[in-house]
Image 1 (cartoon, rainbow, N blue to C red):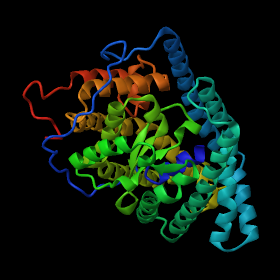
Image 2 (cartoon, rainbow, N blue to C red):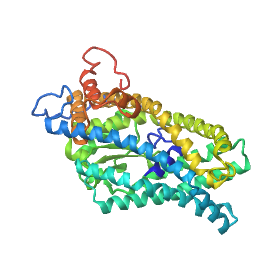
Image 3 (tube, rainbow, N blue to C red):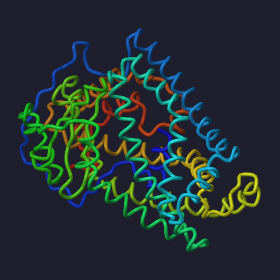
Image 4 (cartoon, helix red, strand yellow):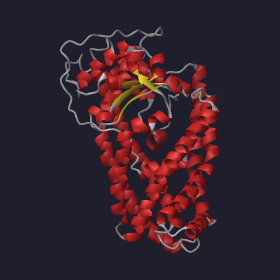
Length: 440
């Protein structure tokens, strides 16, 4: 929902919710080799789709492009409409008549505001889910989907109420420095969520079972990767997630830090890829940890949040002078100013998106390199395992092989599947007598 996206922006919009403290250790001298079944069609040279899937992928690509534009425009229209028609001003008046305490006022005004946004956004969200079901990406029932939406909404309302109440209080106490002071508690709250999320939030949406309960050999192979990577993640913190109840798509991830750090593999990945391909996917995710992408994400997000809050401070003054009386906003510390703050944040996020995605694509490419290197010698043919893993990922997700450069530049958080397959086939420093980039 749109509220959750806005709150994620406000909470730093971190690409991965984990941190790493360990350094990589040398690889084992003689790792066991896992054989790679060769696809019946021969080695994977390029990312291709059969004609029927290519037609579906093209149609889905075009439809998603239209939905992106419509969704972005609609979110801005909703915020402008709430301001123009004085909706938030009415919520403020109700809250102020009900209580003098700013926290009690927040308990009334903020949930009404966030619910208004999400109810207006619900038809688009539901249509997007319908499209996912229509194209076979999602198998989630409508009842399950509405349940997830309700849980996400409850989390957003709870977190949003606390954060926005805190922001308004700080604005009222320090109108000229609020953007700086608010920056600190936002990071503290998000760090807490990063640590506790795997225990508290993730189980609300999916079930997790120990990976070695049904996949002991896979766990043994992953342990070879963690040993080579220097990651201290025991097999008791490797899990299988029941993604197949909701989606046909594939994924795995490493999440948390300290005692909450864990490896999670979707059951769809285990079902639809060979073990060497699954190992590459896991190795890629380990790369984000070992290469300190989490720390980079924290730094980039901290800078982005700092700039965003300062821009809100600068632009809000002009907007208040120009539109404040028309929108019934008394000052920036007024509850009625929240839609204006969200509007500025949304516009900033729109133009910052290509920058964030440029950084993300580079980090994802680096993780691809790491995945190829860390599985080399463990997978008999690490290049083919990686290339075919991308092929299966693309086919399952109906990833269009020929995205426009503009779409990739503006919206692409990952390199295209075609680029990733090509790179997996070409990256081979070992045969050239060269040193690998990360795993020596």
